[in-house]
Structures are given as C-alpha cells and as structure tokens.
Image (cartoon, rainbow, N blue to C red):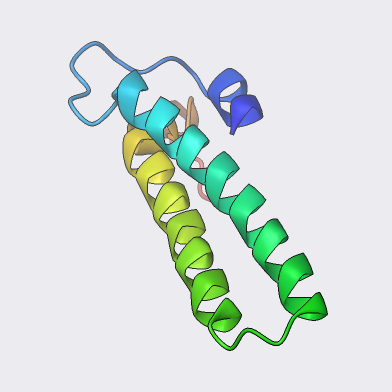
Length: 93
C-alpha cells in the first residue's frame, strides 16, 4: 500500500474520491485484520474451539474490505500517463 502511494502520480485536486483518511483507515484495517487472522489461524491449530473458522473468515472479510477501500480512493491516481497523447497521434496499441 505504501509503495502504491509512492508509485502512482499525485491525485488531482478535483479528484473527489481521493481521501487520505480513507487510505489511512484501509491501511490500519489491513494491518489489524492481518494480525488477527494470523493469531486466529495459529491458535486454531492448537485448540478445539469450533468458532475459529468464523473468526478467521471475519478477519478475512476485513482484509478484502480494506483492499476495496484502498482501490476506491486510489483509482483516480491509477491512470495511463501519455497514452492519450500517443493515441491522438494515431498510434495503436
């Protein structure tokens, strides 16, 4: 996530979807969900508690939600730079 923030161009000022708070939220959601999933999976291998699978699924859901939030906020920054100029000159891809 950090590399994506660095790698893609800055968001345009008119981009309403880009919100640093959403990105921070998705980062912490992913960090906490991954940590919990690790703890749940390791603990599930040593105990007979039947609800570990549900807890692992719950943590996995938050991992997926974090990725969706991140891409929602970053989508305006993920754009082809320069290809529209080449297309205007007649180049085909």
